[in-house]
Image (cartoon, rainbow, N blue to C red; front, side):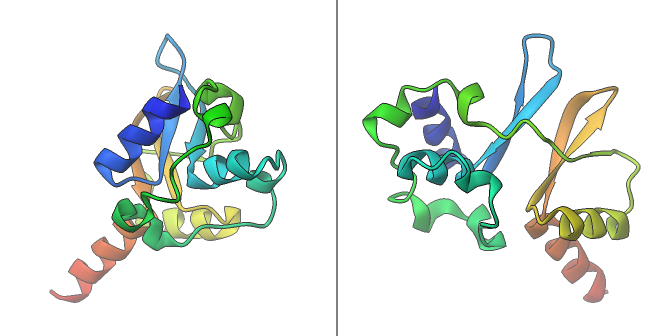
Length: 136
């Protein structure tokens, strides 16, 4: 349920998570954008030209934003998630990751192995990696 998801997102300071089925297969992604869309009652909002800032990976300042209304918090996550997930393989290079993020105007990529998610790479992860690289 959305209420539990929001607790998880706040607790871990994350802005989106993959959604998997009972077999561990990726079926979608849910993010702050999806939750904001549900809170304002706009089914198309999450799919429209609205994009959260990469800084939303640090949710400590967004806890008030992530307070779903009573009618939203009881929804199953599957009803609000984005079914179109952009994935990459574990061997994907950082340049390709960056291009994919920009091309799709998203903030995270789901890393998969044989169709199953094994990790997430966010814009923040790439920026940190590039920063670490440039410091050496």
